[in-house]
Length: 480
Image (tube, rainbow, N blue to C red; front, side, top):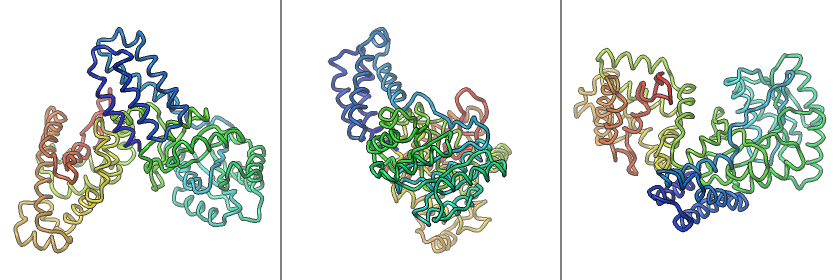
């Protein structure tokens, strides 16, 4: 997400960071570029105008004039204004009510409401330790009820059955009553997709809202529709007392216009981002982290949180212990690291959150890059356990057999062995004193190993290795 905007803004702001003094003249061109970057990202015009005016006012004010590094302060101003546009801080779900807390989902057809219900159920049960009941009040699409039932089974939520011959209000009331009887913490009501210009359908959801009085009314909208997402959300907000927005398909939106327009146009906070098709691909929306990503400064906090949830700590601890005992980093360990990285969204998912690497995430999404990771795993799987533990055994005849078994060429196996050796050296450095600093120096030697000039397996090694990164202000090592 935000790849295009991030790339454009990063290049634009480089021109001003070295300025000894900022004046209206020398920031004029930069502000024009910022304006163009935002418009190309499909940010709504009123948002762009206000954003640029506020940046200009602050950039030529006292705050910058008295600074020793005006260029850096300018970047900070842009960062702060991005945060303000998107809503200062993460707005959490309000569940402070007598259980069950009722959440009503609204939105256009095809925006991803039903999938978002399941994702939100999983998020609530895993992160907030809440028991969730879900029900579908979409009486116009029988497949929607069946879809929610299937997804509820996947995420472990209780499904309340409904049918197309019932009224949405009755379904919702009965679901809430069932949740009370079963002592559920949260009820999520899915609704039919509707257009804001369809008066009858809007009246129906108003009636439903009045009947159940939900504590949260969330509007689900497709991020790829850009500023139209904000305009649609506003139209729904005029009819319903929305409490927040869920932006779906944000992983497919390279522009980011919706995320930057919604809060300003609707006055409603974005509460979650849908970041993929997987059932756990839902992230709380943190404006300060998103602003950091847009400016190419990464998002280490989200990366650390994701690592804590998704990585296999036992495997990582076992690897750390093994390396500290002086045992080598073998190809089975290498395969584990590939699998761990897959769980973190692959190379692209990692680079998007690493400082200064956002621009490379697009390269990491290329078919060639993805194919290489699949290929490497296939090669390792075609080896015997003995060969994985001792890669020095790989002579010509063994490589020929492995190539035939994995559908690859001998040069692919040679490249894998070379990458493994480089990563093994890095792992050894990481377990010693000053491991992180040594490892970062080691990354430089791996440039160009993967297609498109990516940082090769070194980039993966930096994240995939045990104890490789410390969260800000903490001494705890994370298993990546």
